[in-house]
Length: 171
Image (cartoon, rainbow, N blue to C red; front, side):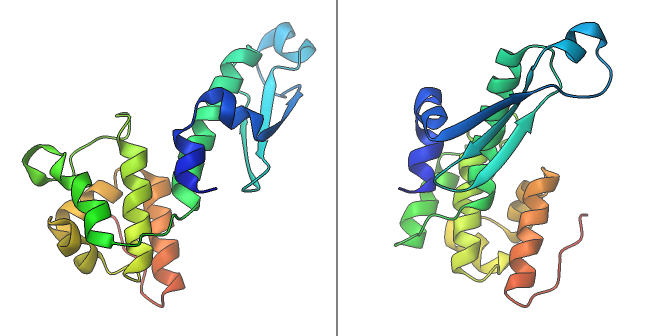
């Protein structure tokens, strides 16, 4: 299975691939938090990824937050192979207004876009200019898009170091 299969599936399907642990979180929150096992840890067995959510006093809310974090982590950490780089990624920018990457991290299309862009960056050995050219945008637009989320930027820099390039600074 691929990242896309897991990340695009239903919550029930994703949860079925996980080992769910509940436990008591420490910290402020009053008696209810200290007496109930409301914190949730999800271990995605096929990928080995682990996420937690413990900020709410509700186990259901924490489970929903953990699932959301798991989807983000799947896009951030796992790479899908790109057979035909331009065909896979041109649709990403073509769907954006004005042919620019202009989606903020709260938009549902942000994380799938990040996943595909990181896939492309892995293929082009993290050369931002080459990746921008392949998707028909500017290097500055691609860089600005990736810099919107600190964890995405950190992953871009991890990839760059992996390919022997210098880390990028945020502007």
